[in-house]
Length: 455
Image 1 (tube, rainbow, N blue to C red):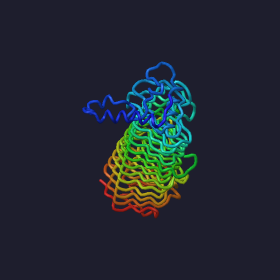
Image 2 (image 1 turned 180 degrees about the horizontal axis):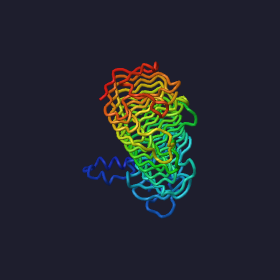
Image 3 (image 1 turned 90 degrees about the vertical axis):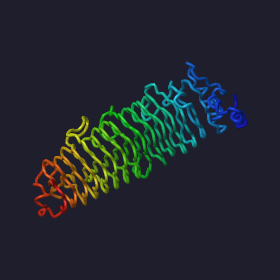
Image 4 (image 1 turned 90 degrees about the horizontal axis):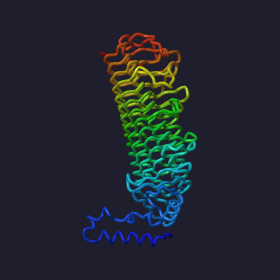
């Protein structure tokens, strides 16, 4: 059946006429799908068929997109694969009832260098069929004005959604049981990832990467991420709720992140990263991480409950510097690291920082090793630690006094119940001073310690 815009308007006019009749509200549930677009049934696509409908669906997608109207799929199961969206393609389903099941191809749905495409109200089922490296059940590259909303993506044999150089948004959707990453973006061109639910991804929840370090600006807002595994091993790119790599100016805000194998949020060489107002529980390693060659990070107003290390701002030896760590609540740190991580790395620490940073207004409780750790060996420069509350820690505040360590100000903090000293000088992992909060730090010209309350 051929389709043009006049044909589409005939369908919609019929729907509008029905709505104008008496008792239209009572009939709304039975309104034809054509009020939303062109019903795929009229283009030869049948729900529930045991046959592969890839060819019929592709023809329907092409015709609807050519007429610039949405293609509407009614309730039921559609078996297909390797569907390609042209510019203007919009596929609309009945939320929770329209299911596309992968039968063939490197992706169920893909598009390359197109504009104004969208998926709404679809259940996309990968059936755990293996996908090639780098592919998702949904794969889009070079797309402008993308909208994926109110969809459910299950059992992807590699990644759930893969976006390469994409501008648009993924919102209000559920991605569960992906073998790799739930949502993977590389070289975004203006992307919003918001209000999604991500469950049990095999390696990572959301990855925002760039091929080379540079501006990205992706917004990762108000998502729920839980049960992140690390099936491929390692502790950097895998096992993280949100992983930002080389991507500058990314905002990670208001997310609920629970039970990640390693980190809730991990920024690697991610400059101007903002990690704000997230609730992070049961992280296996460092809950919130800014590491390697970044310049600029704001980690503020987050809740961390349960991790080997609450917040780490580190790798000054590789250019990691310039941060604010403010207003965070951190508690219940563990005295061990998960398998697969470097056993020589720190654990049981609330906040660790190294260079050009301000740590202020945080509240830390139950940190077996140290509430706050400042510097490591000679890797310390220009850090202020002021106005924090540290309770029930091994050491309240540990500060490097190793040869070559730079300046730090430790002032006006309240430290209670520190078993091994309120403020202690360290050479790498070894304590080498008494309690500097009581004895003073006159012999360390690089340190200014004042006004701290110890009890």
